[in-house]
Length: 150
Image (tube, rainbow, N blue to C red; front, top):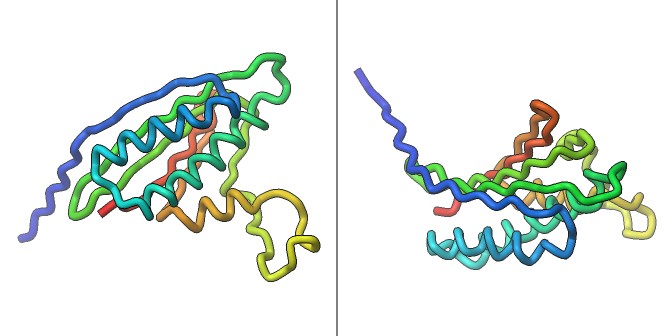
């Protein structure tokens, strides 16, 4: 009989910040502080930074369009350890429901001037992450990205 036990080490850190593009550097600094603590490689940090930038800027730019004031975004950094270490970064906002994973990938075989505007950043985020998951729950967009660190 084989018994498999999964051990998860909790390293959850959370940042709630006004969803404004001016706050992007604070979000990136928050994520990178966690990645540096884990001695994550520069290559993986850059891949995560690209996805974080795209996703946070989308929240800041589009989630609260109908509101006169910016809302907030919560960014949660957590890790899961089994044979490897995986970073799980979750974005939570109370803005307009939007599942970026349902967006059709752009046709990258077309030249930039023949491609419709939009969607390339989400496409690049999907390509840089190991997986992504979206759910809309209790009036909140919840998007989690996963990247194996080691």
